[in-house]
Length: 424
Image 1 (cartoon, rainbow, N blue to C red):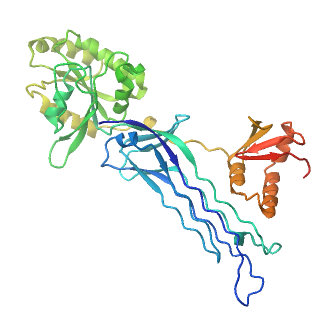
Image 2 (spheres, helix red, strand yellow; image 1 turned 90 degrees about the horizontal axis):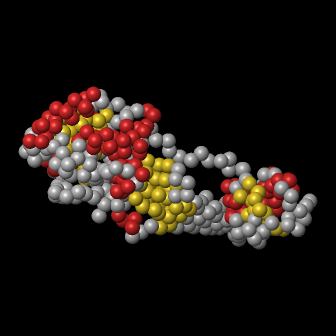
Image 3 (cartoon, helix red, strand yellow; image 1 turned 180 degrees about the vertical axis):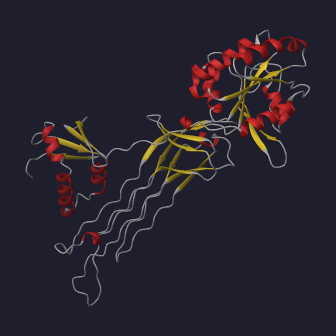
């Protein structure tokens, strides 16, 4: 089963809690703090693997959750780091944020990785907070929460050559003749329902990958006939072989077919309209094909395209087609404008926003302030004092007051609800 799209949930592990401990040994009076740090939570990492060619496994497992780091111990013992969760995906997998659709990674090389969810930092033990003025701190940090999100995975075939054209023009027959691929070939439309890859060997040292993209139809760029599912796989190809039924066996005009397919390509992606294209006039073994060829050739060449006559049924012209495609691949020069921009610009971690709360008067949202709340032990007076100092340093007090917050109003940060008090 060929599956080229999936939606998965990834959740990294929380960092281990830091330890609050004091040295206790015989003959050592008033031993100092010796609480160790917690271990880092496990990451969730996507790994491109050339041995995988479909996303079908994600139909059965959609959630990938890493374990939390171990807590710190006495005698400055740090907790162990949790193991990462490795998720293997096929080459050509595009990783997108499920909520925004932003492209996060493009995994095109074997062994390439993307950290889909980052494990939380381990909390610091109380030994880290000892100073000249506070030699016996009693508080330790909790572990930082790991990141979690839903992702969309889209697989785009990595092929040098893409065969496009209307259904039943002979694409499957061509790829079965020039490679070891064996797609189903039958005399009805939409025989091929999934893209087919075949390796075309020129000699012992030279070869390239050809993809038979299932038949496109009018309106494919809007999604008609699973158009988006098919068109996505053409984007990575270096050249396009546009196959025409020059004999017009089904009563269609090959020139009309040529224009409609190119229109669909250009409407789906502007860069596809600029892709190097070779027109393949198939079914030259049929008398109508020989009659139509000169008319089609004149029209296609006037549009600036090269055309080659072939017959998938007899093999005529296929050898020349294979070598011509190999030459075009060697001459292929990537367009810098086509380079994929990957990633999301991250906001200043110290920034935050104050919005009306659903069950409180106000809610504060921001990366660092939320992390501070998650890692603070509010059962410890020293930890609360440290929290208040950082709260003031970030200017949240003044920002709340400017937003209209008054004495006694409730303020939520993550799962913690505070009562606002002036000059505390």
